[in-house]
Length: 354
Image 1 (tube, rainbow, N blue to C red):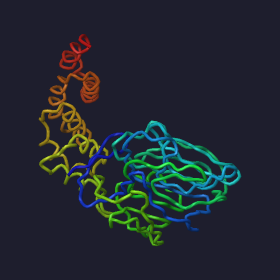
Image 2 (image 1 turned 135 degrees about the horizontal axis):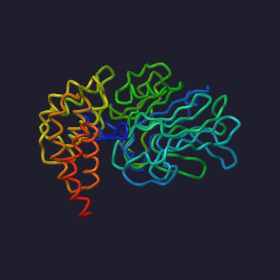
Image 3 (image 1 turned 90 degrees about the horizontal axis):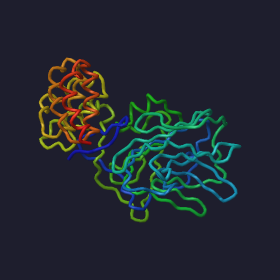
Image 4 (image 1 turned 90 degrees about the vertical axis):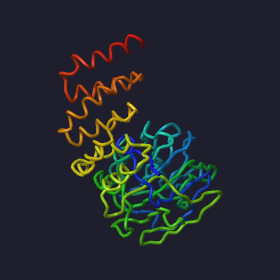
C-alpha cells in the first residue's frame, strides 16, 4: 500500500507499515482540562498531520483549547479558515483573540503537516515545513480566562461546536517555540516521547488516544471518532526518511511513483541512494509521472542529464498544455539550447490548436 501526503508544496509518498490515525468522522478526542495544557510562558508550538476530506466551515477544529464566553475569550486553537487554508486562534494577555491565517495551503484528500508557534513576539504558521502566515504581537503569555478542555478534532466554546472531517495524526503540543529547522527535522518522524519541552504527543499507533509523552495525558473518543489504519507513514525516530521512500520505490505496484520521486528530490545528498532505482523507472507510459521522475532524477544527480532529456522530450507529446509548458520549462532549465529545436516543434502545434 502506498500513501500520499504533501511536503513543501509538492506531493510525496511513503510505504504504509503499521500507522494508525484518528478518523474523526464528526467526532473528537476529549483530553480534559489540565494545568499543563495551559502553557504559561511566552513560548508554544502546536503540530499535527491532517487529511481534510471535504470543504469545511471556518472554525472547524484540528486541535483546540479555546473557550469563548461571549464577553471573554481565552486559549489557543488550530483550525480551518473555512476556505482552503489554516487558521490559528491565539489569545495573548491583554489583547483579545487574534486569528492569523495561512491561506490557500490545504489541498483536499492529501496529507499536510501543519504547525503554529509563538515566541513572545510573533505568531507563525507553517504548512509542510514552510512558513505560510503569521502576525507580530508582543505579549508575556497566553490568556486562559476563561479556560476549556483540550480537544482533537473539534473547536468548542459556549455556543459553537465545529468538527473536523477527515483524519488527524501525530498531534504534538510543546511548551517551547520550535524553529523551522526543528519542525522540518521531525515532522516526518515519530518522536520518542521524552523530547525537551514536549507536553503532549498523540500518534494513535496503539489504537488509542493515549499520550505518548512523559505526562500521560490520555484522552477518550466521542461521537463516532475512531482509530484506524492510515496511509500516512513516518520514519522511525532514528530512521532516515530516504530509507522509507526507497522501500516504497521497490514495490512492484507503485501508484504514486512521481510523488515519491519529487519527495526524494528534496532530500539532497541523502537521496542519492535512490538514483539507480529512479533510473530503472524511466520510460513508463504516463507523461506526468515521467516528467516527475526525470525532473527529480536530474535534481538529485545532474550527471543523469543525457538520460532524462530524451524522456522529457518524449513527454512533451502530452495533450495537457499546462503540463507541456512545465516540461518545456524544465528542459530549458536543464539545457537552454534545446529550446530552438525539439521543444519548439512540440509546443507550437499545441498552442495553435488550443
